[in-house]
Length: 335
Image 1 (cartoon, rainbow, N blue to C red):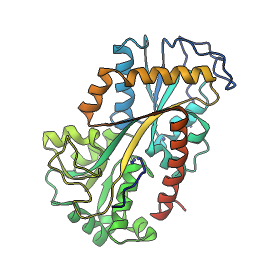
Image 2: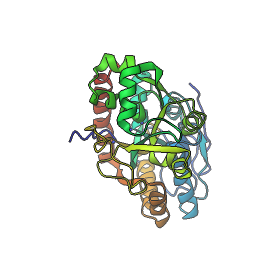
Image 3: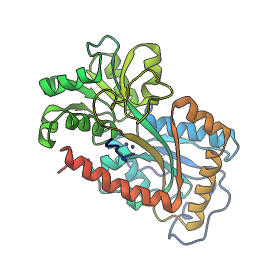
Image 4: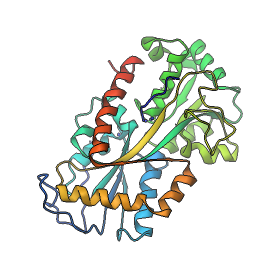
């Protein structure tokens, strides 16, 4: 099986956030001063409300405060361009006690948008989760199987619309890989795939529920409520094994395409924070990860625990950037 280790495994404005726990100039230099107890942490979600990054940021904020790990954890949404607008904001952030949600979507968006600010220039803190994607259609769609959908795209190209997260993100990559598995080349994929990107999961949901898109791709957690309500129908999931929360839905491999893809989400901090502040953030996130409240969030949302911190996470990010860039080139999404 050709399992993809890309873990999407699916984004201008400068915002300066103030901190109640540290003076504004405490984040420079990368030395080992600063740090100490964190009483407030700012959380940036680089997307509009309703999507997987927003769910992750708000779930983390809830755990941090409910477990009394911090006094407050305000969440700010800075959507646009697959997270690269939020990434530009983080590049100008001076509060060292700031965490921004990131993931494979941003890795791809940096490449497709030729963004000036890059993930490698930030301070990686932790990988939190991995999540399979799900391909859905509106409940009254004529597509009964994933093969029905893919064959229609191959035959009718731009007449079939697929919506999901940002251009170059996990959802977009999965759509391209499905067409590659169906026999199209990089140039043919670009010509046939009519992909409608969105800066937040809520926008993709609205397109599907309004019958303004033929199909959608996103993390299971984003579409799950609508699948359970019966307003969307799941055709396949991108994990190697069937999903526990969608046990009756076939995997993409079972549906006839030799493809496994999971999406990862994690946390970044500003550039050049001190070693002490970096370690304090890693310790804080580790405490949240160890809590029963976080375990409950994982179970409820169908997220897979993929916790990784510090230098190991930094190395993972570097490897992921290389792998995603090569994949985007192979399926014709970047030159």
